[in-house]
Image 1 (cartoon, rainbow, N blue to C red):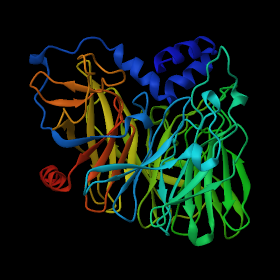
Image 2 (image 1 turned 30 degrees about the vertical axis):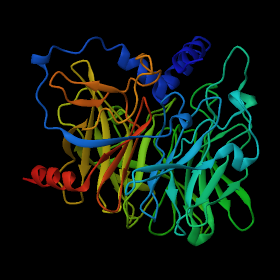
Image 3 (image 1 turned 90 degrees about the vertical axis):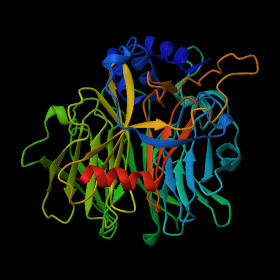
Image 4 (image 1 turned 60 degrees about the vertical axis):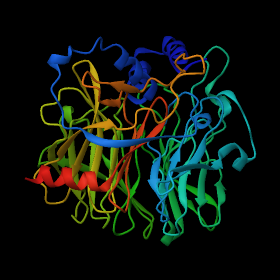
Length: 461
């Protein structure tokens, strides 16, 4: 059964409030939204863009059976990328991509790692976490539930998500216990210096306002979890500052900060430019909350925040004292855009913040690459991203029929190829290249460092 069929059945069984949460948070419904936009504008109405060139590489297709994936991409210390996949009702895998050889290898089969091969809603169907790298070079990631068939499955059929640490040097995988029964793992951030890592869970049950999202600490020595607080915030990311304090968003706009040195949890207020966050910012949505991209500067002193449906970037100085984080707006990601969706955000090793933003315009979804470097007056929209090798994989079968879940490449009237659907992940490599995760088929787009250097130089003029 395909993704869209499953989602239609699931939506029919939901309350209006639950359906709203699903529309906001679930990737597959983004495809429905795009499909409903209607026919693209005539060629003469579409402006000529200065494209950001990229090279596409397909991720092993059996690891993403419906062409989908999430935030899960990070560069390891060995200059290889580590990408999480999603095969609903089947399994999930961690894939290693070596840009030097352009080779993809599956390095972790999550069901083999945990010693259980449950199918259906009991499967570890998604690596949904933003992968993170420990000081040792180990790649930390977690698994999450997929989509149940409401006709024959219940939420309790999912046992719970696992946390993992894959060591590229030894090729061994550590498996950590289920954090909360029946909850998936949505975020994982290691602090190996202190012998711990943090996770954020996702109940995904949709009962009433918000959902259960437990913020926990795991002690690598004792092998035990410590529950810190139920944040009830959907899809929250965990970051660690220069003092080793861990942060997680709370439903309603507060921010919790945990200090492992004192075992103390603080609940902080926030302001933006001296005022409470506005409803348009989506930084403090009540009730259902809103997905917010978070990442930390390399020195651990600046927190970057980018709400999914907000065409804006925010920062907080973490050296400030007091019970309120005073943040500021850096400005629009795409000036003049009226419909944007950003689920791909990171701060790279260079200190540059990157957002891969989907802008809906002229009946087409354009992937824009946006950068912000400390000292810039505002974020810089470098332009929409093109695919320079649109025949990078097979899109039809031997009889010439289109393969299912392979409709993610769109050809513009001028012949330029670009991605068609919402973008989910972005990562800056140490050499300055930027990698973006694309849907249908699940693929990596590489924007090479030399091309970016030229674009950034032009944007600075």
